[in-house]
Image 1 (cartoon, helix red, strand yellow):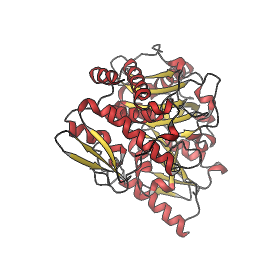
Image 2 (cartoon, helix red, strand yellow; image 1 turned 180 degrees about the vertical axis):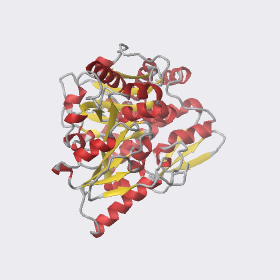
Image 3 (spheres, helix red, strand yellow; image 1 turned 90 degrees about the horizontal axis):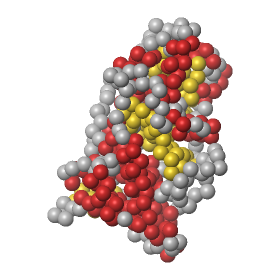
Image 4 (spheres, chains in turn blue, brown; image 1 turned 60 degrees about the vertical axis):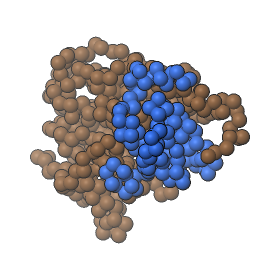
Length: 108
Length: 347
C-alpha cells in the first residue's frame, strides 16, 4: 500500500519493472533480482549518508529507513524512498543542490 | 503474459481540433476496433460504435508520488470497458483512444494507467498525440502552461488548421514546437494517418534519435520572453562511457521526486554498463515508463543521450549531477568493475 495516500498495490517501480518482452529489467531470475536489490541498497545508502539516514530491504517486500536516533519508517515502494527520506531528514534530497553534490563527491 | 491493450492519449488545447482529427481517423479500417473514451461531447459529432463518456467526477490529489495522482473517472471508465469486453457485452476492441479535455495536463491520465493496480496489467500507454492549432498555437503556448505540458508530453504533435494559417506562421510554430519537444514527431493534420496512432512510442524508432542534440542550445525562437514558454527549453546530455543502471535509477528517481513538476519530459537512450544493446528510458513528469531494451544502436557512436524538456532548470546542473552519481557508482559498486560479480553475496 502506498504509505502516502493509501492506494493499494503500488509496489512496483520502473527500475525493477516486471519482465515482459522488450522491457529492460534486472527483475528476471532470483539471483539477478537479489543482486540488483543489494546493489541498489548499497548505492542508495551512499547517497543517503550525507543526511545520516540508512535504508535496508525488509523481507524482500518492503524497505526500512532509519536514522541515528533510532527512528524507523517502513514503506513498500522505491517510488516512496525520496519522499520518506525527506520527511525523516527534515530537508530535501535535491540532486541539483551544489552542497549536496559536493558531499557526494567527497564520498567517491 | 498476454499483451496489454494499447491506449492512445489524444490531447490538445481547447479548439485545437482533437475531435475533428479523431473523427477522420476513426473512419480508417485500422482503427475500426478501437474503443473511444471522450471527456466531453464537443461541437463535432463522433459516430463510432464504441464511444463512451468519461464523467469528470473524482480526482484524488497528488501528495508526492505518482500513484497518488489517479484520475478515478478514467480508471472507472477503463475498468468498465475491460470487464464488458471480457463478458462479451460490447464488441471486441484491441485499442483505446482517450480524448482528454482541452485544459488538462496529460500527466494524471498517464499516471492512472501506469500505476493503477488493475489497469496496469491490462492496458499500456502506446503514445500521446497532441494537436496544436497553426493559427492560435503560438499564443496558447505563450500564455498557457497546460498547452506547453501537452506538447511536452507528446510523442506525436499534429498541427491542425494549416489551411487557415500562412506558411510563415506554420513554420514559426513548427520551430517553436521543435524547441519545446525535439523528441516528438510533427505531422500536419491533413496528412495524419492512423499509423500515427498505431505506432507505439515504446518502440522508439531509431530515426527519432537523429538530430536531437542539434537542438541543444537553440535560442533562435525565443519570441516570448515574458511568457509561459520562455523558460521552457529542451536540451540533451550526452555521455561517452557506460552508464551504471543502478545509479541512474536512483539519480533519476531522486531528480523527478524533487523536480518532477518542472521536468515535462525525459527521453534517453543509454549505453548501460554490461549490456550490448541500448536501453531506452522514457518519462513524463514524475512518471517513467518501463525501460525498453532496444534491438540495436541507431548509430555507431554508442553514446548515451538523454533529452530533457524542463521549465526553468539549469541544464549544466542536471548534467553535473548525473556525472557525480555515475562516478559515485564506480566507487560504491566497484565489485562490478573488478569482475567478481559471481562471488558477491546478495544480502
